[in-house]
Amino acid sequence: QVQLVESGGGLVQAGASLRLSCAISERTLSVFTMGWFRQAPGKEREFLGYVVRNSGSTLYTDSVKGRFTISKDNAKNTVYLQMNSLKPEDTAVYYCAAKTFGAANYGYWGQGTQVTVSP
Picture 1: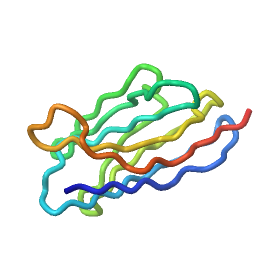
Picture 2: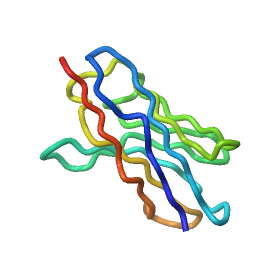
Picture 3: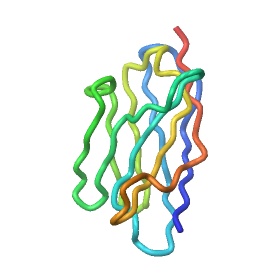
Picture 4: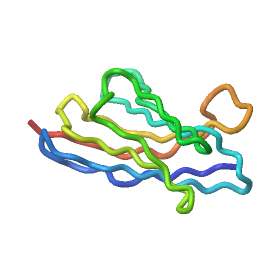
């Protein structure tokens, strides 16, 4: 059983930075990869990137590469999404998700946090 709680969303102006947090609660150490996604109104959910919990390896989709950074703090059981140079088109609900060892898909999702970027 894994529970994820996001925080850190809000309203910012274009060009600003924002850091989202995703706190992980789990009965056993089962999370292998933590991903970040977003969904804008009327659009499909978009994968942003992931971090491998043990190695720290990361991967990003092209649309956010160079602006967004995913990091982890294993001691705090928390994953972060640092977003820089935000644009109005980054406005969306942002979700973190967990993929456990051996799983093919992200099976656990947070509740989402709203990020709104004004022009």
